[in-house]
Length: 269
Image 1 (cartoon, rainbow, N blue to C red):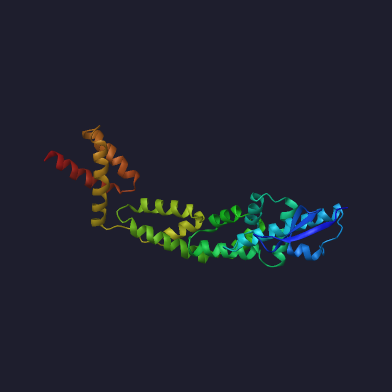
Image 2 (cartoon, helix red, strand yellow):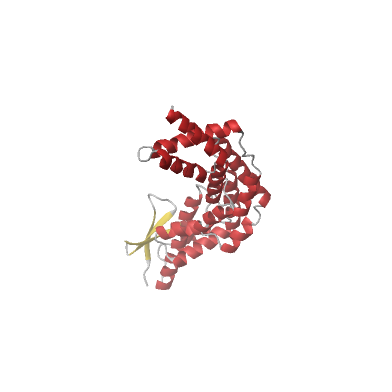
């Protein structure tokens, strides 16, 4: 069996030690492994002990790599596992390193999931479906996803969705109520809110227009349609095309007819 002939302290990392057999470098170990196995000059080592030390040293390396990774922000177990795999640690080593991280409370997927949900609620203004997708990407267990997201109440969802809907409505004043509703619905759907909740948020908005507002809106959108089709169509065909376009955008029939009558008078003049 090999005998330790020399032990030197690492130059780059003083917490690691180089082990020599017959004055030839054999391997290096962490200080904790050195102490645990009482490695000293003249100690005889069997192959089983050497392999055991190598495995334990790999665990400590993986553990320290994970600690460095966790030092920047909270991470999920799934993220840490992915990082350690990228560093080419084996599955058994990763499993043991993960266990140690839980024991020392450096990992806590529930606390991570709760923090992620609150951040996405408050900063990202996301609904539960989008947050669940984020949790899925982080490798959070499905049951834990459900348990954490169950605390995201419908009242909280509605309050956030209502605020987003109001911002869009205020920004899109030159759109018809139908267009505004569609824009809000598409946006909130992408944010991860349910159709039922989106409908409720939209119902609470005041989107009706007075006559002057309808006139301004139809003039702006109608003129765009008129310019778009006037280079190919004229007369009845042009009016029909514009009428169809305005109808699809949600303009009332009387508003469309008033607009087209005005355009006809302009062209006759």
